[in-house]
Length: 277
Ligand code: NAP
Image 1 (cartoon, rainbow, N blue to C red):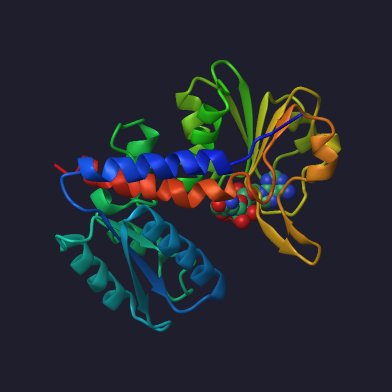
Image 2: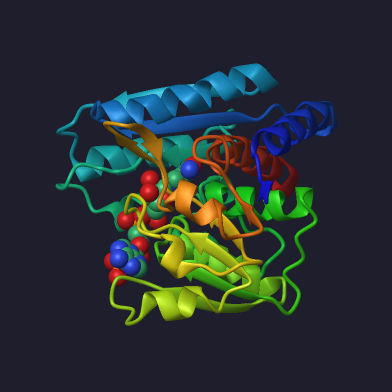
């Protein structure tokens, strides 16, 4: 059984980013817009700021009042869209319920939308456009495949989860790599029967240890995107101890997909500068 560690992949991406910076036409700068001070969001923001510092990319953290009106937030986004200095913008999710997440995400200039969550980027990605920004976790999973020479050609990939953030972009990218893709979700009937037919399983369902030994068969590759803090420590959407005994390869939690997400976001930040006309 092979443990698919994300750490060497993350380190390689980090080196590539550092080496790419002198080749860019201008210095990248990422702006993170956070509304309120959700503690979990603040942890993610500080991870991004730390990574930016480690590769030499400037990151600005704009914190808006929890009660900011939609109009005020849109106005801040428009100012950032036209800034010469800011080359990438992300809206830290989740937003408070009084704000329309779709309206806010779509207000980010598509050229600076490095999370790839605005409607223009979703469209570009769906048609396989070369200038599309892929949400970071999905891009990280593709880098993991590349690093471990996992070919998707003709393989059956089962993705459990259909979020805009993970499941859908992963499914779309696997299709582009000529996999046959099945996407499962909370209404799927007979999940075990479907997951057992996969060559590669990507699990992003947000349910701690949902996938157990009964969902898998020998020879499969399992990518666990889930991340949960429990009383017994961090765990994924896969019951690692059970599943690792059956399959050929699996990502650990922590240390699998997790380290790749932030690094992949910064690849998007670099690409946003490259794509600038
Ligand atoms: P999400 O928005 O909550 O989406 C979860 C998806 O799983 C939904 O499509 C849902 O189906 C489906 N689902 C829920 N219960 C299911 C079940 N019993 N059987 C089959 N499908 C089920 O979550 P997300 O943002 O995609 O994130 C998924 C997981 O990845 C979470 O654990 C999150 O913490 C983790 N994550 C990790 C990273 C990282 O860097 N490691 C990054 C992002 C996310 P419906 O559509 O029918 O509701």
